[in-house]
Structure formats: structure tokens, C-alpha cells
Amino acid sequence: MFTLNLNMKFYGFALYYLLLVLFLCVGCGRNSEFSDRFKQRLKADTGIPGKFHGDLIYNLESIAALYEEEDQIVLPKWGNIDKVNEMLYVIRNISQDGLHPQDYHLMAIEALVEKVFYEKGLKIDDKVNLELLLTDAYLMISTHLSAGKTDQETVDPRWMAAKRTARHDLARFTDSTIVYDRVIESIESLTPSHREYSNLKKGLAIYRDLEANGGWEPIVITGIKLEKGISHPDVAKLKKRLSAGQSTDSLFFDDKLYASVLSFQKIHGLTADGIVGKETVEALNISVYDRIAAIEANLERWRWLSDELGEKYIKVNIANFEMQVVENDQPVFTCEAIVGRPYRQTPVFSSVMNHLVLAPTWTVPPTILWQDIIPAVKKNPEYFSQKNMQLIRNDGTVVNPVTVDWKNVNRSNFPYMVRQAPGKDNALGSVKFMFPNQHSIYIHDTPARNLFAQVDRSFSSGCIRISRPMELVEYLLSDKKDWTTDKIKRTIALGKEQTIFLTSPLPVHLLYMTTWAEDDGTVHFRKDIYNRDQSLLNALRQHPPKETEFIGSRGK
Image (tube, rainbow, N blue to C red; front, top):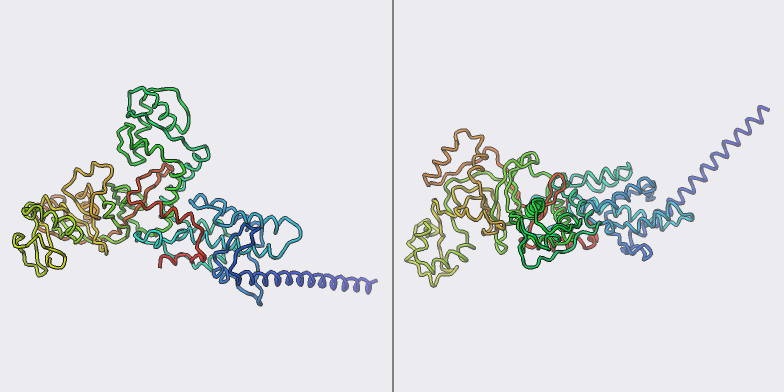
């Protein structure tokens, strides 16, 4: 009996190992077949067949770099349905970032998941295609969240602000992410860390809900300005529009409607007077679709922008005509700004403010000299004396303007520069704030203080004029105890240039954001004064490039 039991155990173990070997052989065979087909697909620079909606694989070279061969066998990385479902969750919810799921193979992946995981008779080609599409989608989303979907240098070459840089080696990051089932977590780690980005996402969700509920109908005001206290049939239309579609029969413009109009005007950068005229009606009639598009464009701009703006920095939003000092992600000082005209645009860039100049002189830049100053001198021979300006040779010699034949001057026979002395009429006012840059742009005071009362403040030749320059001086010099408010005023009154270097240089970021949102998701919209949104939106709506770049490559 003992011998029989021993023999039975021996044959049992033998059968177990035989079945195990057969199972492994079948698995190896399947892996070998998968590997062969996978390599063939990588070599063929073609799209997935039409039955999978013709989705192109955009990252063949990058995908090839991700898949290590073990004994010449390429192993699948997406064999776990939970992992695949995480990726589907990421794709379906990418719309929260202002991107569109259909750009990331959503329909093709959903169809293939059904075939690979839930239908009988698995085809290796289906498994290979699913593997390629999932990895391609992950690569695209990773890159688009990290550096933007669009190529900033092509779409908006005038945007030269600090760019996002790589936080990961994409190949290693993607491989470890997929292997260790951290798909959602990894994608979330790649989104911009700015509070403004997450706030805009909240705002986008609000406007998507408005769109899902039908948005709003355009209103027609029949040749009358609507204001508090009047009764008119158009008031009912206005109430309906500002109450998100809830109709009302009341024709009286009451206090509640007045408050709603004021709020609307403020968040849309309009004159906040509570009167509904042409400009307010035009803003009311911009569709919810266009509002969403504007939010999407500005989310992309935040994806272009570096996460490291500084613990303390100066931010100018050109489109909002505003300058802020930001500490720990919160504004601590805000003032109105005047920016460049549409034909003399203030550029978008980053630098570091290292000094300021009290009672500055103004050396007229060439563009202003030839387009503004010389034409004015030709019309008025007293222009130089009236504006407290001097004509100076390159060697520093001061020249009497009456000795110049102004009628016949041109760029080739004009060896002079024009400088305005310090004083109340100086174009730079009492102070200028300097940060080295190739554009000769700086922030400064201005004698034309009446312009700050305007809503649209695109009046300058590119530099930024601010409404509260002395308060900014005091903020920047707060660590220099000898520079009291009294001393600053006395130095300016002397009318002699005084340069003061900052103890702690401050990053400066000149940006162009036509929308932003508060912490509760309330979105502010501004006019696209430089007409930059549409070209960005056109690029966002195109298919991704043939080969998506690695994270951070655009920032190098």
C-alpha cells in the first residue's frame, strides 16, 4: 500500500509539473505572438484600421523606447483591467482640463476593451492595438498636461514667459507608472500646480453645466439704455438672461437687477455703472460656447507657464491692465496698469527686477523717436523746450535743435538721441522699475494719471505704467530702513537721477490671460485686446502632432 501511495504521489507531481509546463508554454507562445505583432505594428507608420475609427498612433518612436525586450520578447503593460479602467477614467475626465477625450483614442479604446476583456475568441491584433492606443494616450496626456498640447513657440512666438521644465524622465516615469498601477495619481502629478489653474478648472465646470442646461439666448435691447428705476419690456429679457434662464414677467429695473448688472460688468471688465448699454449687451450676448473656449485657451497658457514663478514675484496681466505683487500664491499689492497699444504690444516674458531709478531721465527709444517725436518736432519747433528734452550726440555733446534741418532728417543722417530731463512732465514720471530684458520694457510712473480711469488702458508704446508707483517703491525698499518715505520724496524733488539696487531681486512675469477665476470658480473675462485667443484655439482643436515630445522638451 505504501508503494502504491508513493507511486500515486509521484505521478500526481509529474502530472502537475507537466500541466504547469504546458501552461507556461502556451503563455510563452501567446507572449511570443503578441511580441511579434507588436513589433510589426511599431515598424508600420500607419494608422489603426478603419474599424477602430482610423485612430493614428502619434508616438511610435516614443512607444518603442518604452518597451524593454526580455529574451527578445515584448511584454504587454496593460494586461490588468483595473489599470485599463484607470486610464479610461483619465481620458474621459481630461475635459476638466479643457482638453477633449476624443483626441486620446477614447472611442477606439472603449471598443477594444470590450473585445479584449469581455468577448470570447481573443485576437492578438486586438490586444496589440489596445496596448498601442493606451500607451499612446498616456504619452499624449502626460505631455499635454506637462507642457501644453500646442507648441507655444509656433502658436504664439511672442509668449516668452518662463516655461515649464521636466520633472520626470518620461520614459522611466511612464514605465514605472503603468507597471505599478499609479495611472490616475501620476497624471494628477503632472498638472500645473498654480492655484489659478485649479480655479479655472472649477470655472470651466460651471460653464459646462450652463452649456448642458442650454446656455442662454441672445437678447435684443430696442434702442434704449436700461437702468435702475425704469420700466420697460426689455427689462424682462435682461432679468431672464442674468438669472440663468429663469423667466420673469416683471418689467421694473429694481435694486436686485441693478446689483446683478454691476456684478456682471465687474467680472467682464466693463464700466461698472449698472447701466445696460451697447457694450454690456454685447458681452451678455457672447455665447456660453465662446466663454468655454476662452477658458480652454487660458488653461493652455497656464500649462505653458513654469510652476516656479517664485515665492514672491510681480505679475502683470496685460489683458486685465493690472499689476500685482504676489507672496505665497496670494496677491499682497494690486494696482491698475497701462499697457501697449495693439500695434505696440507689451511682450509676454519673465525677468528679475534688480533696481529702481528715482527721478529718472527718459532716453526716447527709436520706435517712438521716429514715429512720434520727430513728426511732432517738424510741426512744432518749440517741442524740445516745451517737453524739457535735449538732443544729444553719441559722444554726449548736447546739440541745439534749431541747428538741425528737421525737414530732411532720416535714419541715415541723424546721429543723435533724444533725452528728457527729470521733472513733472517726464514720460516716466517719478520712478522706473528695471528688470533686464531684450525688449527694453520696464514698469514706471506716468504724468498722465487721468488715463487710469479708463476701462481699456492700452495706451503705451509697450512699457507698463502703474497707478501706485510710490507704494511699490516703499514695498521694494522696506528692508532698507534709511530709505524712508520722506527721503524718497526729497530725492525725487531734487530732480537728479538716483539708482537704488534691491537687496532681494524680485522675479517679474508679464502675462496675457484673458480669463481667470476666483477660488469659488467665479470666472472673469477680458477682451482679447491683442487678438491672440483664436489662433491658440485653432491649434488646440487640431489633432496632436505626429510624435509627441517628451515632458519638458519644449522648455529646453
